[in-house]
Image 1: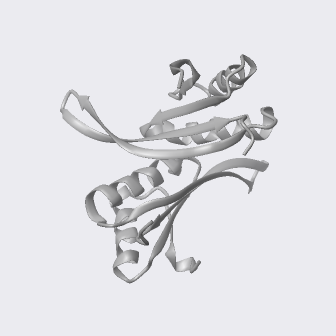
Image 2: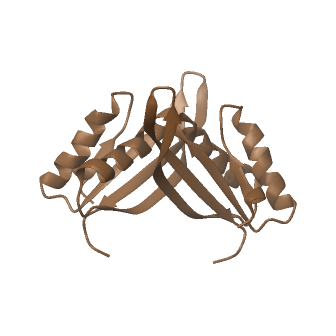
Length: 92
Length: 92
């Protein structure tokens, strides 16, 4: 998997990330991964839903993975949830 | 699917929902669905991760589904993302 095919969702407006996903497919990607951690997870789901419902023909959700990541903060290690939504235009 | 096996995640502290999930399995459920909409989606993922990593032995994620729901608000209809995380203790 090419790292360039991953869209990291943060705190910007959701349409920024939708545009990034759509652009990846326009540029020939066959698979795009939407990733987010913590509170941005909701926005990652929004990104996938809006991209699929409004912009991308023939693209589908291939897989959705949730996991727990350990991150370093000023006050020590803490756990944060993460999500990966894998979109593909390869037919089933 | 028994409706009682669904845990709706909202704005309460995450451990409330973790406890609800763990209780369902303790009471004999073989499958529990964690559901949330909008900003609560992040907390639903947290609920599943914490329940699996800290409390539930032999339980796994069976399926994660995201979708778009249309809801009525004071200012008309609007779309909101939703997630369903299906946990099961049935071995693969």
